[in-house]
Image (tube, rainbow, N blue to C red; front, side):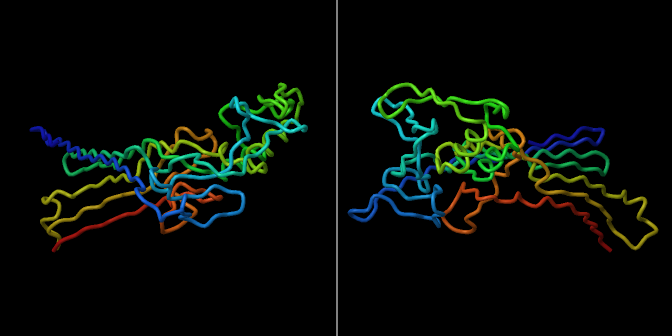
Length: 269
């Protein structure tokens, strides 16, 4: 979309939209799944599972009884089902981007705005922060209270054992090896790039050796918000702990992407 007024004001809007769906159609006979990334002991990992999207997370869950109730032990804390099952899909539902550009009398202002919808993230960083009391999950933890976890004992009777807030936060989210509680929706709003430029008028260059001269201030990875993570985590969904390969959506204390600033000078003679 391009608009330009007689006063010299111009506006251009470019965009894109991407939606991919990958399905594993066939594995070797007798193979239930194939591990795609390194598997840290006790942590979820990416797998190829026949009939499912490529790279789904398989991991441990809270043990449940035949009625679907969460099961606790005699200490009032959740028991773990270590028979790995699917707990998330790292593939975004869709991704879109918009690049608006405004121009006026030699000035130009442009930005690359991105939106990622869906795609799960297995985040050990968030688990560690919750477990150590730095941030809260969706429902804040009162660090001075005791808690009775919703669930039943193995005999079906309701849980009535209180645990401390430390046991709730640390053992449930971080040290309990329950992978399913550390899956987060990766929907993200992002300002990937922005720039402000100015081209000097030719009249100012008439007595100089320059045919044209322009300056541009720019920045990349300026701001992002993973809207379904706890507010204070500030997790960057572009980060990954698995590096180049088939892994995606795995976070083992991964740092954010680098924010960069630059100044560009263009000249012709």
